Length: 451
Image (tube, rainbow, N blue to C red; front, top):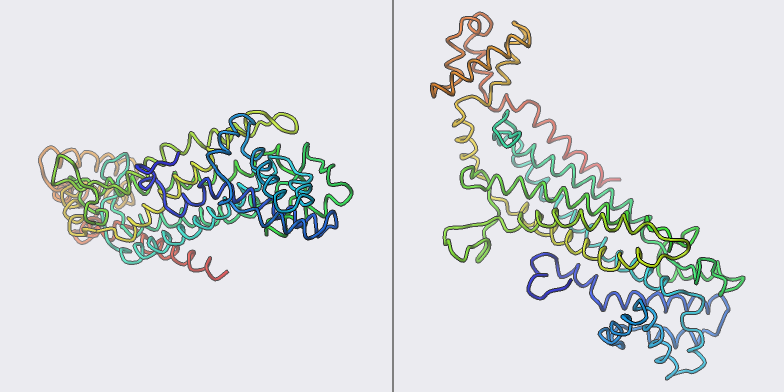
């Protein structure tokens, strides 16, 4: 629901406009105008009548609140909208009013109007994903060899690089960009089926009217009306649910890196951003929190869209209504999350020295895996693992560096020279082929822009 107090935090102005009452009304009116023009082009009635209808298909001519009150009685807002449009057209041209909404059903107007709103939303998502992708590509390249501790189960693991972490984010974002492009081709389709999907009221020229209506609106013409088959809006919802999950993952990573006890990265600073009403020192990760909240809220909304796919016969009574606020809310939330995460990625403050200190604070334990791998070539995997595990326990208990403990072990001395042991504890070497993996992600992004 729209809220002057909360909406600016959770969505963007562009997305809010796409799903405003005015945009919903204008989407339905654009359908009515296109249907009228198509009917005239197909020879069903005079072109002057279509012009008279189109001239009144402007959202500012209608009272959304009044239409809403009428919708509470009629069951959907298209019914009172068509009645109001017919009255307006009749005031100009009584004859033209006969042709308003000819051959269409309320669901045709509402579904096609929604598709037009989705087109604006998908344009915004495309721009937002490109913005985020560009910022992540910059992070990945700039920090290709900025080494920090990898973390599994929230515990220090082998060293990775910040560039590799960003490349992982980038790779997922690029998949979402392609996925939404594919969804767009299926979702942006005209819905025109008439009362029960046969277009009977339009007579023998029905298919031509449908073709011309799609042409007027620059939408795809589906092979069949889809009003009872909701995979199109459900696919949009599901794709956005996947995107919300990735944005939430990025947000969680940044928030964890920003913890004071870790302090390896922080969201960009700005006056009044991330403050606390009681603790002046606080700098909370606001962008990450909003994206995380979207990742919590959106899956339930996606489930509603999937449940709404069960439409009885040629038009179901409840599932369709369940979509009306659900899909817009998904778009609003994911649009806001995308905007916040893009801003965080563009201005992420990286503390590489802190990363080095945190690695050093593990007393070499993050290199235990590399040590076991090096020893396994001589002792076998099981024996090497047991040896390093025992040495790691000793290092932790005695507060000593793992390298020093291993260097005293005669089995290690027999297998690894001091220089070999030094390489085991070299953080950059321990990051493996992170640089090559970053390059692959950047090359894949660049290649996709050339196609």
